[in-house]
Image (cartoon, rainbow, N blue to C red):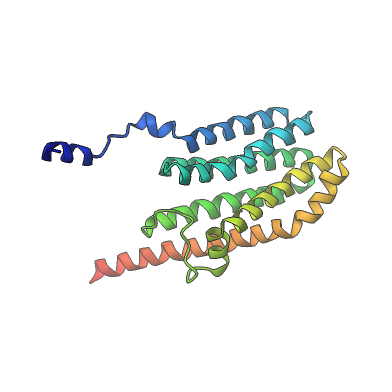
Length: 222
């Protein structure tokens, strides 16, 4: 084999933006978005179909990350698409809970704000500190968050049960006892753990960002 042939075989292949957009995990992400939107349309009058489509959107969350690892198609775009879909789906469901449970509107507003603020600040803090992913949490930062993000089983169960809690509250309104009232009570402890994790995450992110600011200002004053 000639030197030229060897060199050409080592050349990196150019990957287009369009190709990245249609990576397998991103296609799964688009399907998650579509099924979530369908569930929002059905939410006022069709609880069972809402459960099916919202469930499909949430269930597919377990497969986009697997596909990214299996096919070596992990991307920043895919990671953000996944996180934004999670936040938007949960927020949209919680918005509807405000409609059917107006007396608890303030509580749901607080929960949505906590969820969005903690995840946004955490992602921004991790990026600002040079981390390649918001899931790369060291035990020195928080043992609770390290367990939550680094153990995929724990992450999957907590996120799944957290969603189950909100879905169960929604179904309770339509007088579903077993998949509504009972599931809501059973999932409540893990839902509460998720809220604690959000608070810890928000506090940790704030400290990371403030520490970066303090370090930068100290260097400028030298």
